[in-house]
Image (cartoon, rainbow, N blue to C red; front, top):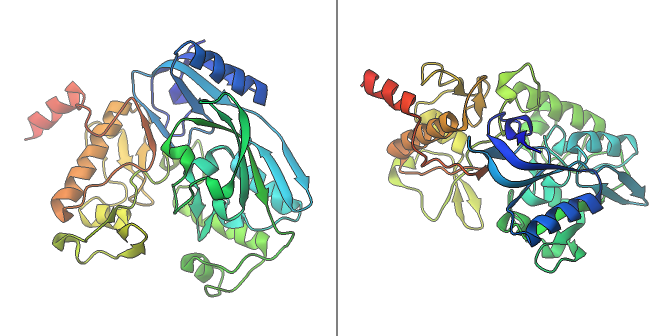
Length: 353
């Protein structure tokens, strides 16, 4: 059946899926992908839709919506089906006496998406706790476990699952400590909020509650009534450069294995795009979050074409100011920053010039 992808993504934009399939079991997921592959039909896997933007033309293929459910605890090991929502799983783990994941509280999306992105927040990475990922291998047709050491985890947002669509995540396996005390705090802002310092520990539930409060303040906890959360979270990735351009010499920097990392939020803000920017841009339906400059938000009724044009506008402003070209942190399907702006937007721009 057809389905609007705007209903499946947290940005709430996108056209229709030509063939929408709900997969409630592992067998359903494998069958839906295998039959499409055998017929030469393109496949798009969707979980929580929290890191996905699809073009207004939709997806001319099969969209498999993974809605598998199940959490199994055994010893220190936890086995979770890919379709489980991430934050409720974190809450359940804490209730069952398992610690470690509390800094990752409030992250939107499904469990199956976390190894793809190697989700990270507040000083923790999912790869620190993940032991293996059960996948369907579209190349061989086999279901197999890939140990964490073979998943290609590097820094935040890196994995073999992101680099290729060969593997469909079916289940994620974790080893978690049984504790009500957090790991040593690694994020200065969180430690300060807790009234302590980096390297200290705190009760796991207190860490979770504090992280959720901090995320809400930044519009990073989904809320249908708050348009600042109609987003994919951080829209632009922090650029990593071999050398910092002269124009960006005042920008804060952080060491990275691939070079020097620059905070995209700082670049955007200093280029003249403050939180909330966009009310007077186009029809005002796409803006930066009023809470921080890194999230691009849908204020209601926006199209993907508007979104891409707005993102290109921000990118161009940052590049003019700092000689740094920003890229997307989210997954773009059938859309890009280089898409032509809608005719009406070009007309508005011409009228205002």
